[in-house]
Amino acid sequence: MMFNGRLSGFACIVALTMTMWAAPAQASELGIDRSALSSQSAAVQQKTLGDIQSLGAIWFRDGPTSGSAQGVANFVNEVRLAKQQHLKFLMNIVQMDEDYDVPLQTHDHGWKAKKLSQIDLAKFTQRFQTLLGALKTDGLTIDAVEFGNEDDSYYYDADVPYDHLATAEELHTWLHGYGEFLKAGATILHEPRYYPDAKVITFGIAHGCDQCAGPPKHLSNPARVVAMLKNVDGFNYLSNSSYRVDGYGTHIYASPNDIAGSVTRTLRGDAAALGPDKPLWLTEWGFLDLKAFPNKKSETLSQCLQAFLDTLDGLRARIPIGPMMFYRYDSWLSDASGKLLPQAKVLAAYAAKQSR
Image (tube, rainbow, N blue to C red; front, side):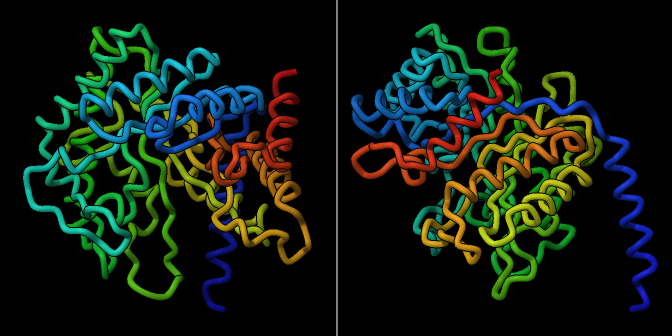
């Protein structure tokens, strides 16, 4: 077709650029997510975190379930248990219903549609300071904070249009809304009384499907949009006098029937848009549907997990990849009784290999 020559030239440029970024491959630290663990019993929390440590994970990812006194106390206890297992903690901080003083509508996924452009930053600030203060009072360390979660999706930031691609004006609203949320949180986090050395990570990108049928409900080319946070009305939300973002969050969910291809395309797209100056933190990675295994090649989930890890190892020499949090412990690595499933051995073997 008439664009083939241009596309070939562009591909060569991208390939050359990726080669220029090449650096000695370093192992990424393995982490595991178990969302809302603080809402579980103490016994479940202890068992979960003990299992995660026994698998060789270095990181654990979770966030508080509410800003109430009980919610804060529960989360502090969860962090305490994680630290007893010598795990680094990636805390996921998102907007909550209690951060708003405007009516919130329930969307079709069953929770409230919350626009970051409408968040009451004073309420958010107070909630976050209360949480950090409680953690500090207990003598606990937070190693990194991921601000937001899949905010390129309507369901996690309702500033993303529901039924059409974002216009320039809507994109500006999104950039300012997320940027101010990130700025407020990161500035507080790095206050000397809290955690000035904790790493700041942007939200994990959901990567909505532009080619899928139905309303988009996501930002197109989201990594490019995150890069635009470097200049919003002249302000750099990624690096300024108050804080510096240490890594870009991304969520990588592979196609079970095209693991290498789907992972490679997504990570290369993120890296091309965001540049090589900061690592990509895989704050969630894995697969979306347990029923997809065995895949069309009759490969088991364990084999597919290994293929995923092998793909990441192959990309690491050319793309800066930071810690990677498998999603998630309770539905993919253990059964309803808490017994570890066979595929957990794949992560354990990988972690053991990386630690040598």
